[in-house]
Image (cartoon, helix red, strand yellow):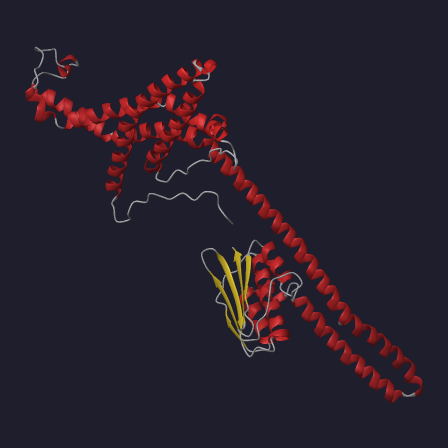
Length: 439
């Protein structure tokens, strides 16, 4: 079923080692934080000045266009931020829905529409307060990078800076001894610590800023998509329920019709024959024996019809031995040669096996009755998404899933199981019936 989330993943090539991917992510997160800090300072200064200027001048109507310009500018910065946080999360962040003026609206109404759009106000709110997480993240990232680079390269620059008198350097104050070697070793150890914790600190700093941005810039849109997805799932469930009720009703009507036209008529005739034989025993025993023999024939034919009807409901071989054995038995009874390709050896869910069997049984019945085909090919394959059932013949074609045709009930049966049924049946070109069932 359609999914509301169609995000594109920024997937790293599989040939890259975990170390390379880690270093790449550190670079992405670092540039995100370092660039985000000046943008945050810019937006808080710009939006605060424009917003309060617009609010203060609303009384003379000058503030209205200023507020509109502020909101439109906030949209632009929000679009830029959504593009920036995509690599941090490893997926493309979708563009949210913005309220639009109705078709034919006046220019004034189109201009003022952003004032009534909630997402636009959230964009401006993000621009005004993003400097808070940006400042925290920027401070942490700069500190950790400076500590890592400075500590690991201390031997390269220590000589170039003045040192305090004895017992005034940090290692000496900590009681770690004196001398250049001790100082270099201490600062190098600090560099190792900062380098070892660089990834989690930089990653956490970037996520702090990115989650703040996503909550304001896409939170409402994500909630709206979740509601739409839930509504779509509910509609699908309702359609499946309706299809299941329709399929059950159709199956019951067919069973009632078949029993009325077949076994019931034979049983009525059997009762009449036995009554006639009872009367003939006294006057014409030979005729009575002939009538009883005919009644026995009617009994056998009735039993055969009842067995055929039971196969359409739940054949014992399907329950006991599985789909492959049931389809093999079904193909052997077909009046048209069947090429069966069903290597599904493992047992599936009972509902799936029953639906697949019903699809093949109904299709073979229609082929025998209406297609004038010389051969039919049945294929049942298991793939990653479910079970694929295909029945193809070389008959006259012309089959349809439209209401009123024989396959409409079969379509309801498949949809009730959560599957999809497709028919390709050009006139004179044979028929291919394909059912995809979820497993």
